[in-house]
Length: 313
Length: 283
Image 1 (tube, rainbow over the protein chains, first blue to last red):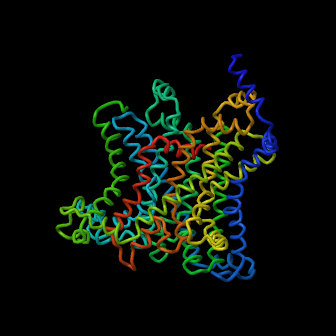
Image 2 (image 1 turned 45 degrees about the vertical axis):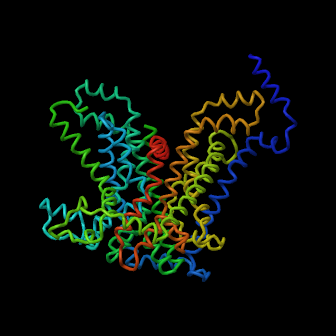
Image 3 (image 1 turned 30 degrees about the vertical axis):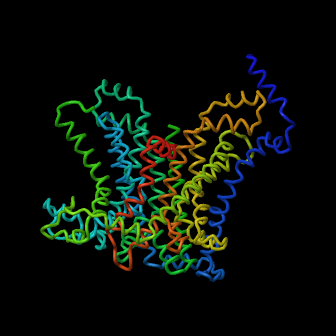
């Protein structure tokens, strides 16, 4: 043992008598309690408490400034007969399903492209992530402007290419609005998928690919039988996060259409905002928001079970 | 690399990658062009014969100067910066301590608490914003920056904790045990041995948390009401659209300038940001 070690050991040992607090912190349980206290307070005050408050609001008839009385499940049964709510539920599912499939497919494609060696790779990777890091609301305004029926650069381009002959009202046409919103959501989400999946791809040993190639596997077979199974655990986690965010999305629709035209792009969150904040019917707004919860719970449980199964195999 | 003829490399690699890059970056180019385009060119229908979308013959800074002098844009930037920095610091502080406790210490209920924090990680902001607005009002925090500084950590702490737990787990236990044998208290070993090693993780978590706070929208929209208190996202959305009139030049200038701080930080710390992003989805 070096002399300095001995010295430092003595320096610690001869430190002035430790206070009661220091001794308490030597106990793992007390230390853990102290370390977790700030987190538990903040999450308790602003997650657990609002959740309880939300459940309580949803079973009352409270409006802004009026506490309200207990009304049981009346708000929820009213929702089942609310045609706008039913449209919002349908839209949310279509929006989530279509956007997720597209984001996964395109994100995986982009990840595979970025996994190759080419000049300017780091540069490209950094720029490709921009739609994800730039504030969504702000970049969505650029899309709103690009979708403007009178001044649309997209219309101009499609017209010049001879693909369309009249003007397309991207956000104003009820049959197109949801598709337009999905395009923007996919635009924003693809970089997240691509970069996460790229990180997953980079952990796969290239020798596996080479071995498969030597065995005569075609590129497509190599992807399907070697790369994809190894990438599946990462993919599932990325999809889990993305599905939750997409299902609960608000800002894209708020900026692009506000839920219109004729509720064609109304989602859970935008409808909850419209009722709870716009109209001030707190209890009904809270009920709409909370109606998301069982769906989210099912999505999370199913995906977590699937992830566990994938990881066991 | 792709084997075979040169045309295959173009079809399977360069063209798809080029289309991706064009699609992902075009809106930003469009923001830039719009913000320097004079109004008389801006409001020329696309069907007009002299519609020239991709450049402008007479670039102007009038939208940007109007934005900076006639709106509260600078105030919104300052608000957002203040809120994002404080929320990030609070979240890092909580996340560091909680991440250490959950990854290193044995205590009753530790597993359950870890699961609880993971579940809050999955709670979207839109689930709780209505009751939370009530609570903010009851605490008299409505229309103050503190409404956001205290609520942003609810989605940042779980993320920071999760990310830092990964870093702590990778640090060998022996390091800490050596320090403890030398007489260091648990507290000191944590503070002087473990935390310094986790600095790259702290940096990643901090950068990611900062961009998340900068980008947050619905809490800021619901909890703040007066124009002076707003953040960039909300200010641009609500104050630059007057009635039904969109001031597109100013809007795009605002969108561009409002993105600069995150883009700036991102450009310096790309690797840390990517580490934070990929760390955030590691199960």
